[in-house]
Image (cartoon, rainbow over all chains, first blue to last red; front, side, top):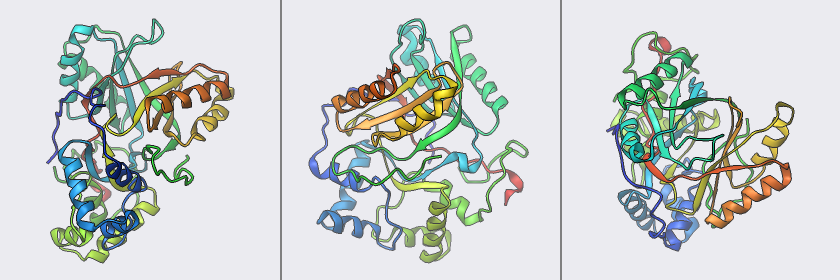
Length: 185
Length: 170
């Protein structure tokens, strides 16, 4: 069930605009499913549509990849994941896509994105997240990633997280609730 | 992947008092949560417990803050726009600046990281312009520069990952 590699090209999919109903549905789900026996029926009621319609749209959005996953969103720190590193790399432009896919296939890399460099102070164009429970082990995994991609000599940095000031799901504006953020550490 | 598949002594965390059922519910349904009328009943049938037990456990886990929600994770830039942004803030001002940043409803993650750029946050809004407005507002209110690092290519999006439990936590 767990796919370790899921390479695809993102960021250029703005053309695929969601329709109004999909946007309202995603906005309605920002706080998550209600914890009741028939949660989709309750969401449907709030949107004034049928439960079948909600289920069908959610399945379609998953199928289309708009929803990358539908399920439990865990707050990892509460489970002891305290060594969460953002690993940033300065990879030659002509190799970045290939290296990104190699990193993404490593089981301990939980997110992997290309982002723009910002001058000499921020020369990094590839970002990986490693969610770990042990600082030293994460550093070993960074070494392992560098070796796997043949990037041992590339400039890189490891940014461990410190204080968590805020963590919650994304809100997209349309019909978003104005409730206070649930989680401020 | 089944939960509990890990090497002995690999993990250090002190687990909360989670039951075996809690652990399966946390681990196995990060993706592919049932899209059926009574999803908690279906999960219960699959695990050999009642719908009520599943609901009680998820409700408790949410109240404890172990799960933030059961819902959709949207692929970046499929719905609106988002960016990762960073700031270099002096230690004396960090809490105050973090508070300004967290106060923006469009900011959903905001963390300290150990680097010269030490405040990192994600801004998500309905459009690219709306995101840019939030960044400008933060610059104006803090007097500090914001480094905007939008995603350009995805190699791995958020698919969840198997949770590793320490062997003797059960």
